[in-house]
Image (cartoon, rainbow, N blue to C red; front, side):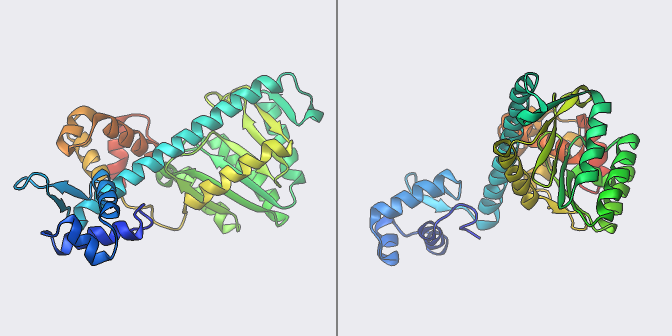
Amino acid sequence: MFTALGLETTDEAVYREMLESPALGVEEIAARLATCPDRVRACLDKLFELQLIQESFEAPGRFLAVEPAVGLQQLLVRQHDELIERQRQIADSHASFLRMLAGTGARSSRGGGIERLEGMDAVQRRLQELARDAVREVLTFMPGGPQSAAALRAARRNDGHVLGRGVRIRTIGLDGVREDAATLDYARWLTEQRGEFRTAASLPPRMILVDGASALLPIDPDDTRRGALCLSEPALLAPLLALFEQTWERSTPLGSARPALSGHEGALLACIAQGHTDESAAKQLHISPRTARRMMASLMDRLGARSRFEAGLKAARLGWL
């Protein structure tokens, strides 16, 4: 477990020695572990940075191990925040990639590997063509939280034809769709038809990949009604396929419970429900305002909420508060 949290074997050993024998100094720990004092000091630097040890109030200059229940919880929260930030960076890079392609697509022909589809009618026609021609697998990012009735009807129609031919379908939606009756009904229907549906805390913009040979992406991630780009160039498809697989591995299957909230996330939601701002909640939790804002943005994504008030209501309905 410690390795998964970023600690090496020697780091863990030093931490355990400090827990079991708080009075030991650097030289004594080094002797017990049969290593050099400089290696122990390097481990102490790392443990201090990870907030697993702290300076003693009674003896300045001496460090004490933080209790595992506290220290590891803080480390898990930090790693969770870093993961969310990484997902946001991936989504931002993906959006920039789409904008770059949009400019290129305006000058490209269908034969050049990038086709520009103007308007939703053109997009729907191409989706029907891709669904008709799919032979192996259809992969979909479904961001935006709860889906419209029209979108769900179209998805059922296209997916039904595809699944009927034995083609595999894998779809990833946001965690928030689990409490939207219509979208959840579609997801359950999909799994009953032997499709697969998972959810994630955050997602890149909408994307549909067919047989690893074609991809549909919005021209403008902020306004999907403008149309889409249809990509068929292998060099463009490879990173999109890799992005989907990475996101799929981190996502939660529909029949599984979502990962529990971290201690700080639950406390932050409770503060927000009491009327605190991000800044005042940060003071209550002894974290930075920036961390509080990032955590709140992540929670709103997971809940599919457009406001802090809506996030509080949905969290209460889900039993998060």
